[in-house]
Length: 213
Image 1 (spheres, one colour):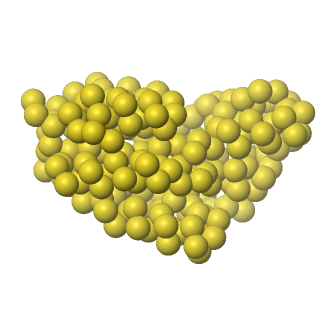
Image 2: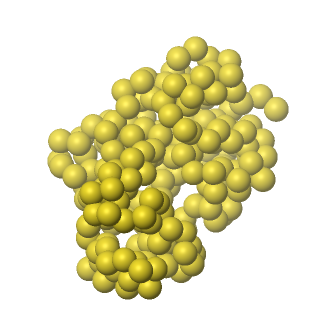
């Protein structure tokens, strides 16, 4: 089936990966490698992170609950210390690729986010929020987990986007920096691209769309 839509994750795709900031924090604090990701991956549908992304709890509750989960795994890390690590730097070349795709296809964004910071990209400053807003304005549809009450990798959120765009999953390309979020998209019939870095993203998207970036 011909490509009709390109659907994008936000963090780690349009911005540098928060995992880089997690690793720096862990090194500075003498924590085990990937400790924060381990906390997030433990009881992934009901932990503090999942509940915050569905806006079931606020930042104060997240702070305490995340700390409890971290302590159970052997280290004291507050949720409030983790939140500032989420906001990466914008990637201009990926924004340019979005504009190229928009000229040919429908474009959508599915982002797991939390009700903190400025805007859907959870920017640390109003200035960054404006830059994120310019990107978000390009999409034909945006689904934020904290507003929808459902988060990736729940298949419903991908189906919701297809309905909003009026396309079949088989006609969609989906980009995400997490393999666990790519799997449901692929299972629905989408062409899933796992983003490892900026150059790989652009190369794989060019192959999938036939466009040049």
